[in-house]
Image (spheres, rainbow, N blue to C red):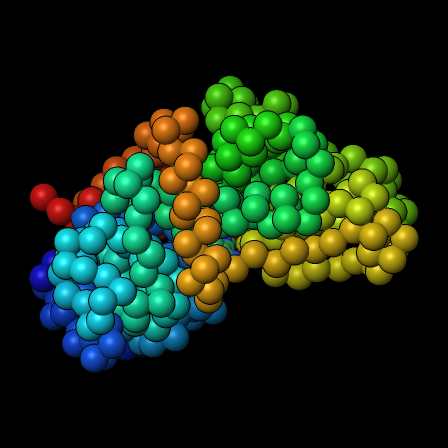
Length: 327
Ligand SMILES: NC(=O)c1ccc[n+]([C@@H]2O[C@H](COP(=O)([O-])OP(=O)(O)OC[C@H]3O[C@@H](n4cnc5c(N)ncnc54)[C@H](OP(=O)(O)O)[C@@H]3O)[C@@H](O)[C@H]2O)c1
């Protein structure tokens, strides 16, 4: 089958479309015919050498996939079920979604709600899953109705979908971006206003900034996350999922012990089956309100992957890059 293979087995990184065998799965694996995949920031990290996230020398990339079950070891899934595959070692330590078929443990497979097509599911992808998981985590923590929620990395896959999902639920998302020329697009996605990356917090000389936000969704990390923690209103929370700027976090305990703020970690990779089901259910419930095509930066075949990965790495994308497998 045709697949996008990443390898540094020769000591040098090679990326490209090749004829590659379908790696045999374990007895308990589900076999999926992949219809769509998508390109995530993590795919760019996997396609690097050395890579902080890739755990094998050679693999088929793609941390996301959606398609049709063609073989299932038990009655969890039936042949013909439409599913999304996100997480586990997919595209990191085992062959991923940039291929026509894949085997995966069933715990990373979720049946799609009837309101979502496999194409919608990959426009959403790990990024949109993470955006909705972040919204649900903030709500679970007690996000006040109509609250103002900061969203960082707003033109990205996580950020742009977080804006839309927050707005649809009646909150007031504020987009923080380094791409000021995308202000109009961010407002269309649901932002009530747009601020620059450097305007996330204030009073940087103090351990506590002004109380600015009822909540925040951050996929940037580093100094941005530290500023958010200092600038949450009393009792409020930030849902943190990413590290596009930095994995470091330098803070004091003051925001936590004097303002009772919370840092909620969001993980799509090892989320439990029930968490996956509730996030996809929440996405399915609002699907009729969302024009998913507005998140698409571009739709490509396997041949377009190398350029797409370069663009993600350079931050030259807006929204989601969809990969079409089925002809
Ligand atoms: N925890 C999980 O399970 C999980 C799941 C999904 C994603 N993630 C992580 O979440 C992050 C975002 O993923 P994504 O798919 O949304 O990525 P993406 O589509 O590449 O978007 C990232 C956005 O961050 C901003 N950005 C880029 N470089 C930056 C920098 N140096 N400093 C500050 N902002 C920068 C840009 O937005 P602006 O130009 O608008 O500022 C960019 O569009 C990644 O770190 C990814 O690994 C984690």
